[in-house]
Image (tube, rainbow, N blue to C red; front, side, top):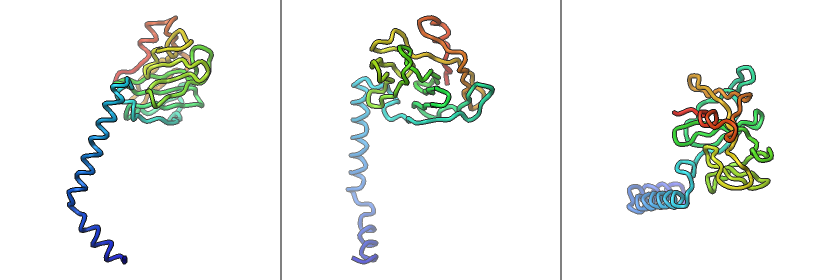
Length: 174
């Protein structure tokens, strides 16, 4: 088969009803998978959310500044020990360590939760404790919004059990 045969075959498929049927099939499968994840309790919006490393855009003294996440997802800054989460029109900044015994938390994409690898404590994307040996939610940092950035005060951490009001307020609504 030479290049002319390939061109003729490609143009013969243009407008082919099978292409639109395939596209429609894939859309239906995608919707079915999303519905199944919601039915299983995976937090809406984080089933296919971004997960990745992040570095501070700049430092304001000892306060790292990050771009406001464009979509729901989890970003981890290991250098500053900050987890930045955008979820349900809010941004949260958490301490990287589990409040139980200071082991670095991990994001479990499959169930849309944080988990401690040491004792298996689990947390929702907003840091609320779900199960395990921990006795409180993930520790949150105070934050401020400055233009298109989130500035995290890593010296001002709120523990849910000791500072309920500060912990609840340590988020930025978008």
